[in-house]
Image 1: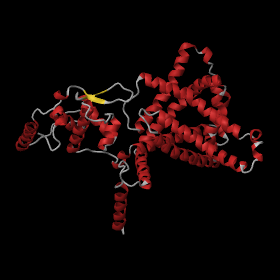
Image 2: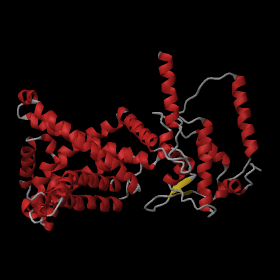
Image 3: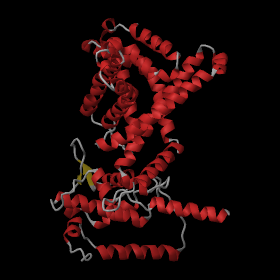
Length: 446
């Protein structure tokens, strides 16, 4: 019985992971693709990567929420929608039940006590610094979900963060105001006389909050990660995250209404505790949606479904030679492939984080460098005639080596054999350069 169940599991896993969503020529299997994404996202969750970042964001948000809203109000006053702050907070905190009104009132009270006009230059600078620090930590969390190590430069950060601080609140509070206007009976009375209008208004009113959440999540997924996110992938992650948001919100509302014992134990602190829990769940759902968008945009990463990826020496050498060949061909205008990290990873069907580690090793050894473009491209750091194949292979061998030099004991025959292999290796390749390699006949090395 146990053997048959194990065989069935292995057969199912083989069927599931035999599908390659990165191959456009294969027949589409949306169900298997979706299950692959769910499994990979679950692995990220179980590994603690998402929960650790979520905990950090909760702490940072608690420290920065009042300065953030203070800056937002100063912007919203210019658009005449600052009165929508408390209704918007009540809407965002709706899963807390009746406590949402009390918490939003307290937050608005804290914000009202901040008089930007009397803070002075230093106070305003600290206020803006706190807000930008929060957004920077949010970007770092989303970059980790997208396996990105590089940060935006100063100008890119300024423009992106400014758009979040200025445009984001206007969109959110305007949407809340639009929803309130839509639910106004005086506005809809003339339309109610038309046939089927009541049913349509009911359906729109039911779907509109969900649609607004999806649009807000999609806006975040497109803007925050330090990479070009496809609208289709951002929408896919936003739809799932929006569904989770509404579902978890409904369950949390039921939990809050039924947890009278917590109120009795924690007294007034119970409201703060529930607020922190909902804040944690909100950030977790946002990061889960971002991770789903990542796997949707990078289906080649789904093939590496193991939790840890260990490359053999041969795989590292193959990876380094192919990536240097692609970079050199583009440099010589013999290929139209733009040598960005995303394009190189897609070409070789390798996870982008694995490729970035190899590119980091090649860059550290002085073989490649990055351009200063908005989307960085990788270029040879010196002439192709000065980069030998031995340089590339040695860099590949040391790519995942420990920074500490380790020495293992071996008998004399073993040491002699290894030296002989290395000598034959160098004799075979000689002084062949990367320039020779990209111009030789594809039948083999001359």
